[in-house]
Image (cartoon, rainbow over all chains, first blue to last red):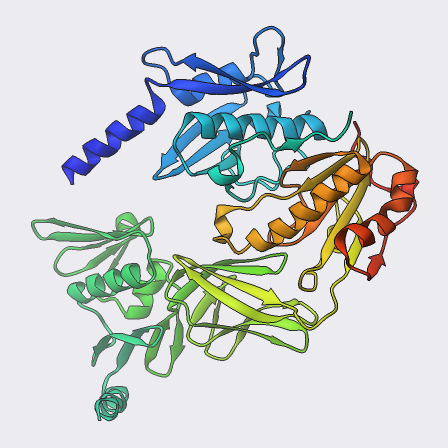
Length: 154
Length: 327
C-alpha cells in the first residue's frame, strides 16, 4: 500500500512538476497552429505554467486563451480534470471559443500522458465553455492529437 | 430443492420474525425484536454502505463509548443509551426505521419487511440514440419501448428522483417514436442503452439552429444525416467522439465526418471537429454555418448528391431568420 502510494506520488510529481509544457499558438501570418515548448521552472506546477503561457503568446503568434482562466486541476488515474474561471470566458465569441478549446486540449494532450480530459467551469460540469462549445462530455487523446480544422477557404 | 428450502425459510421467517430488513431482495437482518442492539446497527449500516456503494462508515470505540460515523452523522452508544444529534437526543432503544431515518437512508415498509432499494439511480440522460442511466448499487432495471415511448422499469426496489419504485413500476419515460432497444452496455455505475431504428427509410433532415431550443434535434433513423443550419462565417462542424460513450458513438461520428468533409469541400468552407451545444453525441448531426443565401438555396441538392440519400426533410426557415453565429 505504502509502495503504491509512493509510486502514485512520484507519478503525479512527474506529471505536474519538472517537465516541459507544449503550448499551441496560432501563427499570425499563416493562420496555422504551432507548438512551442517551454521548460517548467523548478517547483512550479506544469499545468499552471501551461495556462500562463497559453494566455501570453510570443510575438508573431496569437492565442485565444484569456488571462487568468485557470482555477485548479486534478489528476485521477489516466484522466485530467481542469477547472476554469467563468468570468474570464464569458466574452469569447463563437470563433474564439472554439479556438480556445482546441488550444487547451491539444496543449494538454501534447504535454501530459493522460487519455481523457474533463473541463469544468467554476468547479461544475457545464454545458458550455462560454456559450456554444459543449464541455459536458470527456475529451479523448485519440481525437485531440491534431489541430481539428481542415481549411477549404482560400 | 435448494429453492424450495429457501422459500420455506422465507415463509417461516415472514411468519416468525417481527422485522425483516432487506436491501432489494437480499435479506440482511431478521429479528424477533423491533429494537436493535448496537452490533446490529453496525451490521445494517455496513451492509447499506457496501451494497449501495456509499462512502464506508467509520466505527469509533473508546472505553464504554462506541460510535458510527456515516452520511455526515454520528450515532453514539454508551453501553446503555443511543446518543443522537450530537448528544441532544438520548434514546434507550432504536428501531430499524429510526436508524435508517437518522442516516437519511430511504426505505419502504411492506408488512414486517423494511426494504432499502438495491440501487439509487442518480440520473438518466438522453443524447441522440443513447440513453445513459447512472446509478449506485446493484440496479434491477429493464429497458423497453412501448407505443413509441422508451421506459425504464424497476424490477427490484429502485430509488430515483426522491422516490422508491417497486418491482414493475416505471421510473422514466421519453418519447422515441419508432425506435427500439438495440443494445445495452453495462459499465461500472452506468448502463448505456442504444436505440435503433433500422426499419425506416434513411433521410437527410435539415433544421435551423436555435441556441435556446433543441427540441427539433431528435434521434434519426439508421444511417440518416441531420443538418443543423445557422449563418455566419462559412464552416461545417462535426462533433467528436467522447470516451464517456465507450465507442458507441464511433459509427455516427464516421458518417457525420465523411459527409461533413464532402460538404465543406463542395461549399469551400472550413471543416472542424468540435462539440457544439445542442448537437447530441452519438448522432450523425452536422452543424453548417452558412455564409450566404446562395449556399443555403443549393444545400438540399448538394446533400442529396453527396450523401446518396434521396429523401430530404426540410424544416428550415428563410435565410434572414437563421441564427447568426457572427464572424
